[in-house]
Length: 428
Image (tube, rainbow, N blue to C red; front, side, top):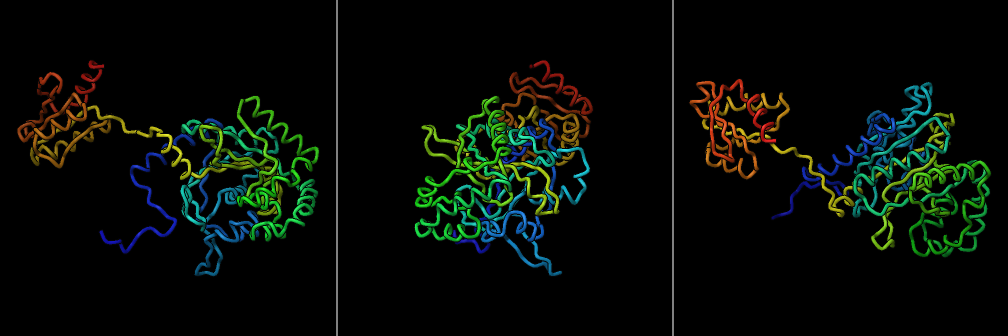
């Protein structure tokens, strides 16, 4: 077959009907957990001001420097296809007066996001995320709660061997001292760092800790640790979060070099990983943390907050790898067979009556052969078949056939639903 002229753009993908079952399973599972913990759903626009992310995510982050789909509108405004969810939710919090609501405000979201990055397994330029934000409270309990909800969602989706990787990167009080120590450590190793990290060491030094290049990872392993520079407040905050996780028996690893790739994080940062069956190779599935300074960047008002986000495509791939059952189809309770144009019209009316009674119907309205339709009902394992031919349509009756016994009986069409319900109840 010749290559089609029109295909999905690089890094974009179609979500086909068989894929939708996985996406719906993720959505339903997330919604169930968020509802239980008292989170309300929010939807923000796909388009946002470019400056929202420059100011909040950070001018020297990979997202802003390399990955944003930013363009000028006909009116001259610079806008961007949203690359992440936290900054828009925080913008909505201030814009819609949620600051005057009882605090904290607990919100969750689900939808498409966009980043221009190299396509690879589980990563696309248009992708889906769900996430949650708790805005207006500094209690470590909410750091813990976002981790626990995330962990429980992944566990309910049958993702195996989960573990939380966690750290504290301090706050404005103590982070400066750590940056100085890290800068001093890297000064003599600058030429051994990758090109990106050489730049990061000047513009956004904490991002060096996030590098995945092997030579940089080896250098980072000997670097000063964030926890050695935490102030008393940040130490106590982390201690409480860890105590909560231990109480709930959530497995975790304390990683002194874990940072997140966005500038707005303070104190707690975490990722949830899955390990292979031997406890070796890890794969990060989701992450989040606390961001008490984000409100100041967006609205000039600091407000305590924390949250998390999950890439849905990566989760769907793990579900496929784990052969997770996502079937949701309810088996049909009755088969509706028809013979001829008049019977087909009457059959559509009866099908609507079954729908109003919340009963699932199977049919083959594109076939007139009764033999074919009965064979289809038999293949589907449906015992009760309603048969309407031309005569039955005219006389306002129907034949109900029991596929197991072969017995048939005639009843008025207005009694079909009631009769089928009665038979199903007797069979059960």
